[in-house]
Image (cartoon, rainbow, N blue to C red; front, top):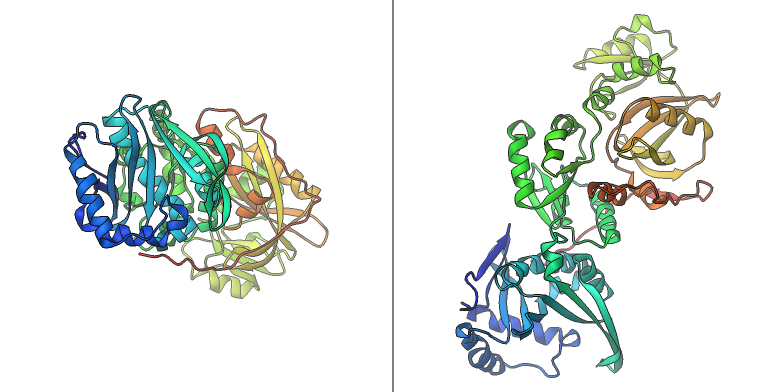
Length: 508
């Protein structure tokens, strides 16, 4: 254990660092030999080389008041996955250079490497900035790994210069890129404005869109993902996973305590069933410095209740598909029967005759009836700012739909839909990302079907088109106005998104 540190063990959920352990030195030797092309190492190390170096240099430094380097074993669930620390320390100037090496398989996984570098550095900040009060931590990285340089800048390192043709790697001269991270950045909280995405489930495109927005801000933001299931696929794509309790077991006080303990300042709810909870506790969360992308309670209630949705739209002269509790009050050739509350296509009956509609309604908890309108379906993604301004809109055609979500979608220009959606969002109070469903009949008349006041399953398409939802959200979460930020979208440029499954291989 290092005498210069009052504490030698630091942890974050399943990850931890501890003063370098003797039992780890031969695995470290193996990984160094496998990754010589990215290290300052010009020959293969033997077991004797490693033993001599650690017994003669590293372990004696545990007793030094001012060691030349301080190294840690990096663990996940108690198993060694890497090592590193601060080397070339100048105690007079309170600075040193970051050293970091992951197990070779993890090093080759760029997504995992970026995640675990971020976690490792955040753990190092505690001893070096918190205990030792270092002023500066530097890095020198070869430009062979642009993703490493991108992640350093994402963490909060500043680019200090580039040494051209500095190193000969595999018979090619490569540049060394220099960065530095200052204690003032750490103390100012640049490492502490984290984001929590709830109900991450399988929402990998959403997580990736948030990560792109984080990189764009240039801030060091850790992405926390929460779900009640420990098997949630999304846990493998966030920086930190929280198996949160069921909402009925979670108080606002407990949520606030978790956010404060983990320095979370922004929450992104993603599931219909949790929107009312966050709307109800919005003011309490905001007063504790936690910004939530959520619309007001009354607007959430409007979107959840399909009968109320139609009645309110009708009152304000907004074209929406009629809805009724009794089929006798509707005149139609065929009917749609669905649950009154909630969103999506759960248990829906489409194009039913009168008798079939009545029979189907008996299988639902709170059925409502609507006329079946043949036409083309559209989803519209919009972002509403804190000033209640419509920041941007992308209209997309639902070309191929599976279980209520667009698997193939393409953008279109449609003035009738644009006017209808603008009328709706200007009539009611919303905030953040909304997804509206519209159907256009053979007369080219547009009807609102429903509004989901959250990020949708295929909404990442609109982000790629220019609807910068999460960048705008992070700006607003920092009390910055987004009024002057551009909405870079040309609806005359045609795009298509095809959603498909893909695999992620993780090396343990």
